[in-house]
Image (cartoon, rainbow over all chains, first blue to last red; front, side):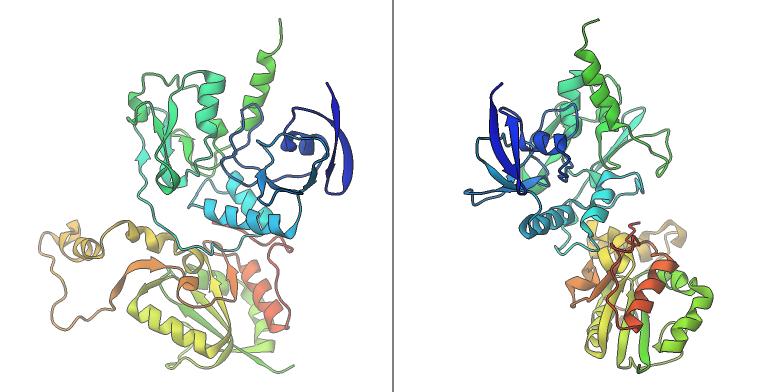
Length: 228
Length: 181
């Protein structure tokens, strides 16, 4: 495939066309903060953490869904980006007791967040305990949609979906019915392992003991590509 | 270096942050070398004095807390939000999901432990007035420093206090002392 020249943080690179900025950065050891991105799933640019500056474009663009183009000059570590990463992190923060095992907490430590500057909205969020094995706690959900994507793209069940927009966005099971009544869910637990917070968790495990393996999903996707 | 003055305050919280403060153990002697604790739940003092550092635990849940916090802000050079209730409003804000009157009725009238005999305290209202929604400190006054944690560890509290008393600005991230929950 044709190679094109680009520049990231002052380093000139020759890269293959068709890749996203995030893929290029990860392949070249340039750290980009992510949350809704997960190896093995298609990207949607939901969380806005991977925003980068591109010369000549006056808004920040998400690295995960923006493809490289010839002669792009990209910056990933400016003061403006750091400022927005902190704002985004603060806006994502909910109360979470998946303590010490939570990707969102790790993110807070990375950007040095000590408090949330925005007034809390205290949205009414339900806890769905209807499934025999798993719980969906909407209070801890950041609507990254990893569960929605793993369910459709990897498991092929299409149990999870999204209703409403903005602050009213909620993850739904089937047609907004209790998870336990789902006719599509195969109880495969891929959503449990994809969830970066403590929103989806197995009943059998005490909180704080929860270890998730998102890497398992990426491995599965790779193995399925093999011709045996 | 001039001796500093400290106050510690307990607003809408469980006093767990003060327990953690006491857990600095013998290091309190290091603090005592540099500063006097003028006001605290463990110090007998009525009026809030002028201080260099005020450590405030708990969220703002009532008109009384609101007033107290405004006085603390006026009289303190550095105001610190100590712990998750002060920083996020935490457990105390669980009532924000409900109507304030429903919360009071449930506590005083309907609670099972009242055996159906419960009633609201009568006469001139003897309690502080709950505000509609519980809020963290920085939604009421300017806060200079935040120590999250439920409670923050004794090490973290001592680190912040010791740095401030030595005229240095503490950096929880750089020290890897930032810890949620």
